[in-house]
Image (cartoon, rainbow, N blue to C red; front, side, top):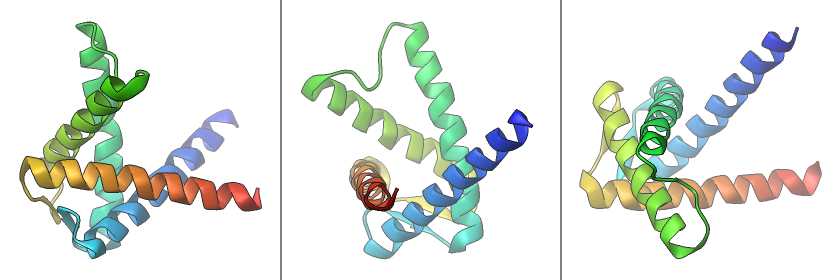
Length: 123
């Protein structure tokens, strides 16, 4: 039964990620997706690519998500690279260069934080 909850949790996370990608696309923040299907696939690919990149960086001793400004910058750059790599695998997703990826990564983080804050008001 635990596996069912895990699969449902992944689906929910991917759906919320897809919603964030659609919002980013509509705001013109360096990333475009063509519809919810592409956004959902992109959300899943971003999750997988992020996990692999974070794991590889951990192998060479670079931590992601550390404290302070340096940790935030490392996280932002890794997120931008994740978006650029993911765009190569997902038809219907386009990132406008590294600067566009940085802006989209920052926008993704801000929108995710706002959604988490709003959900926290009701839960």
